[in-house]
Image (cartoon, rainbow, N blue to C red; front, side, top):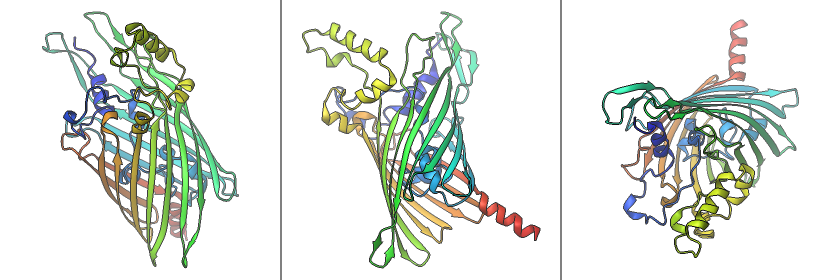
Amino acid sequence: MKRFIPLLLLIAFSLPALAEGENDIKDNDFNPVNTGVTTLSIAPDARGSSMGNLGAATDPDMNSQFWNPSKYAFAYSTGGLSISYTPWLRKIVNDIFLANLAGYWKLGSGDNQALSASFRYFSLGEVSMNDYDGNSAVQTINPYEFAFDLGYSRKLSEKFSMGVVLRYILSDLSYEDSYSGDTNTAASAFAADLSGYFVTYPMVGRNECQFSWGFNISNIGSKVSYDHGANYAFLPTNLRLGANFMFPLADYHSMSFGLDLNKLLVPTKPRLKDFEDTPEGQLAYDEALEKWETMSPITGIFKSFSDAPGGFGEEMKEINVSIGAEYAYNQQFFARAGYNYENASKGGRSYFAFGAGFSLNVVQLDASYMLATAQSSPLDQTLRFTLTFDMDGLRDLLGKRRR
C-alpha cells in the first residue's frame, strides 16, 4: 500500500507554495519550520484573509478568536455569530475545505468582559488507498482535523484588554496497512492562547483617529503523535504582533491601514547537511536530533529564537509580514486589500489578497480572493466566504416586529 497520502497533502499545504520558484532557492537555504496539525494556521474568515492575513490589531469582529481574542472585550455589540467556508486547494482537488463557526457574548452590565468560542473543521476529502503496485483501491478513508476552543477576555483599563483561550485539537489521519501491519492513529492535543489589545484615539488635525496594537501567542500546548508515540510533532505555536491606524476621510468614509508580523515559536529540526563539515559529523547530528525530538514545547518556544542554522539572518527570515488596508462607507460597505510575504527559504507562500463586504443591521456578508505571486502555487485563487450575525441588530429587529 502507498504511504499515507494525506500526509503528503499536509506537506503541500504548509511548505513550499512555489511562490518564489524552486530554481531560485539553493538546497542549503531551503529550511522551513515543520509542525503538526498545520491547518490550525489557516485563516478561517474572509475579512482578515482579504487584508493579507491581518487581524492582531484591527477592529473587533466575530472572528477575533483566531486573530486576537482579547479584542472581544472592546466589541461594539452585545454578541455575534459567524460562519465561514473556504474551499482549499481547489486548483488541485474539489473536496477539501475548511469550515469555521465563531462567536462571542458580552458579560455583565459593565461591558468590559466577554466569553467567546469557535469550532473549526478541516476535511481532507475522500482518499483512496491503493496497493503497492498502484492498482485498485483497497480502502477509502476520510481524514479530517478539528479544533474547539473557549475564550475569556476582559478590559484591564479603558484602553487595554487581555484574553485567554483553551483549545482541544483532534487530527484524525488514521489508517491501517493490511499488508505490512503498520497503523496510523488519530492524534489529539490541548493548547492555549494568550493575547492583549490596546486602543487609543489620537487627534490628527481636527479628526479623531484610532490607533491600536495587539499580540496573540497561539497554540501553546502539547505535541501530537500519529504512530503510538514513536514520533512527535510540535503544534504550530505562533507569535502574532500587529498595529492598525484608522482615520476618517469624510462624513461616513473611513480608511485603516494595518501591519502584522508572525513567527512560529517552534524549534527548527536539525539537518544532516548542517553537520557534515563539523568534526563530529553524524554523531553531532544524532545528538542534536535527539534533543529536538525530546524537547518540551515550552523549551521549544524559547529555543525557536536562536536555533536557525543560519544564525540571526535566518531567524529574521522566519518572520512573515502582512500589510493590509480597509475602506469603509458608513460601516455598511467595505473594500479590502493586502499582501502577505513569506521568505522563499521558509515556504514562499507570498500572495496578494482582495475582498469586499456588505452589512445590514443584522447580517454581514464578506468574501475574499487570494492571488499568489506565482501561478504554480496551489494556494492561487483561494476563495473565502463569511456570514456574520449581529445580536444587537437581531434584537432590535425582533423588537420592532413585536411593536
